[in-house]
Image 1 (tube, rainbow, N blue to C red):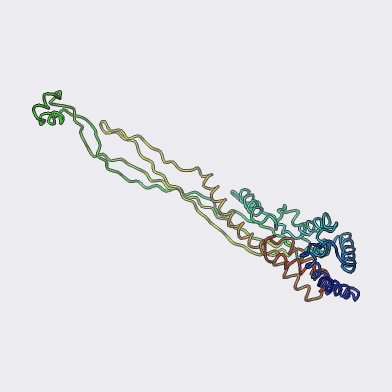
Image 2 (tube, helix red, strand yellow; image 1 turned 90 degrees about the vertical axis):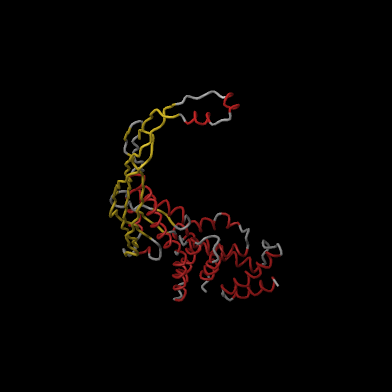
Length: 362
């Protein structure tokens, strides 16, 4: 069966029908791989691989990384242990990835806590989409986002702090407590207990004093102040396509954080002493840190949604180019989609197959 597909591939190769030739050789390679003889291609497949290697080197020399990657991918399917795959394919993939990742410039935002917001958004992006984002400075982004960069993602995130304030409110309240304020002489309760004992037990116990100092209870009023600090941070941001200088998304986000504590006023009434207790509230800087963290995460999440669609964007452009018969451009776009896709995604192998078909002119 493998020999049959080899013959089919060779026949189509002689007729310069490269996509059909590849189909035949790929089927043969699959069978040979299952039989454990993938590195023993037939004469026709060997000639096909030599042609793909020649095209790979030509594309690599011309700086056409996507095209080179596509030819390397074809070679890998037909002969997984081919020498070219050790360095040539990784180099091509890295070059494609460097071109395909979204270049993003973040802030710093204007106004209070702007630099902190910019840094935290950048960290969030790097952690959430390490395969799809490269952070660059604003000058580099503007320089790279030229007309010939259309089809790539150049995003500028900028914004400003609209509001940063802390509101403090206090509410007084009183608490009534029954406390010991003094002592006074009076009948000793222990003497009454002793007196009520049976005579034999009373003889064995020591007689308590008939009188003792007894506590005097009074109601006292303790004053409190319930203190509430409410920190508010509002940020206006916009996401700009640096190629078209077009605003993609613009919005104002706000968040609040509240801290509460109670202060107690000091007072004394007789023996009772209430120590003054100050309200214990977090510093304003700590409250603003919480707010910058939550807002930067929300903005980052929204930006990630855009970036996560990057491979789908490249795939859509590739299909459009294929419909127009622009196979070299389609190949580059499929290569970009493949390079930035999640290695575990179901679409990744589909992008690879489409890239291979496009480079062969299908």
